Length: 190
Image (cartoon, rainbow, N blue to C red):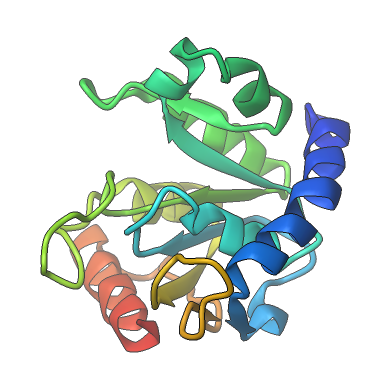
């Protein structure tokens, strides 16, 4: 299986990545923790529309982000399709999105998602985690690469930081144990 839309992803990353870095000035720590090969799931906290961009500019790997299906119903649907995003219907347990992500992982690719399932607009550091990431990791033997984003998204930010942690293997854990471990790792990185 070839990665669909890889050319579109590389094209947009090469143009938008430098603009993103110039505008937001993110500090990136631990990018060497992202394996260059093999199936991985990148998971972190979600506080802003641009959170996935901090991860995208941290690695040369193509990351297939799970994104709410509403993006694919908008006038920007072409962009999300061309960059290899996976549409997710959050109103149901979307088995199609999960199957697509698992197929990508089975072929050694990278998937990105936010275990909270939506942007956190509360004062809590993290919302309760859904089980999709740990379920997919267990089914595909993928490593989970945790990340934490802190600081403010503003022009030439002084404190915007993404910290990428060491990959974790959840294959010998229950989903509850794996989710607890993932949440702890992300909290440490925030």
